[in-house]
Amino acid sequence: MSEQPATPKPVLRVTGVQKWFDDTAVLQGIDIEVAEHEVVALIGASGSGKSTLLKTINLLERVDDGQIFLQGDDITDPRVNADRVRARIGVVFQHYNLFPHLSVLHNITLASRNVFGIGKAEAESRARELLRRIGLEEKAGEYPDRLSGGQQQRVAIARAIATEPELLLLDEITSALDPQLVGEVLDLVGELKQAGSTMVMATHEMSFARRVADRVIFLSQCRIVEAGPPEQIFDDPQQAETQAFLSRVQ
Ligand code: ADP
Ligand code: MG
Figure (tube, rainbow, N blue to C red):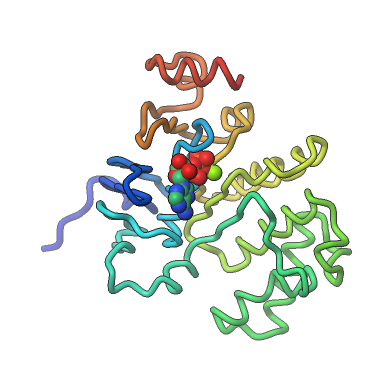
């Protein structure tokens, strides 16, 4: 008889992850579990390892120790096909990283067509539906440089979710935007949460993390100092380091 898990399998499980760049430790014993539909915010000073952690999950950086499981699959196993893992994870970076020589529509359909082998008509019809959802239907034929930063970032999000990834990683996706464009991008992330996306996002938007995250993880000096629901981390942080960080940024 097979054993029944006591709790649903987490979408993401990071256990004992260590990462060094040369002799410098960047991640030391990181443990994180993210359940389906959960939104986790990573906060911490610049250089605290947020981006590196997201990159290890997306296999852009290799862990030096520990393991990362995606829906129970050990993706840090050296035999794993990294492209197949990446096809299951949507990523949006600080800089929109849209392909400048491709139209908005083509940016969104590229992975569906090339990685998942979805036909042109179906991929385009899904992409147009996504563009409708993000309010940019009329931009389908435009090239990225004709869009505002906020619009480009919304297209980057649409591209990331076009393949219906199991997990979405967002790395400071509003930090390169003019302040007046931040809201439209954060509103879209809020809508993704409502729609049930599972997300891990590094952010310096504390009010947004408070509003949207189910759990907040504070990283400092390569490790998790404190984690908990936003009300606890923001209103009643237990660790002096968390208190000091929040008093600087809030
Ligand atoms: P954050 O995203 O929280 O600002 P990062 O993950 O970018 O932090 O960086 C964590 C630490 O790792 C920093 O000290 C940074 O300088 C270092 N680092 C990041 N990427 C590299 C790299 N490719 N080579 C060497 N050091 C790096
Ligand atoms: Mg970073």
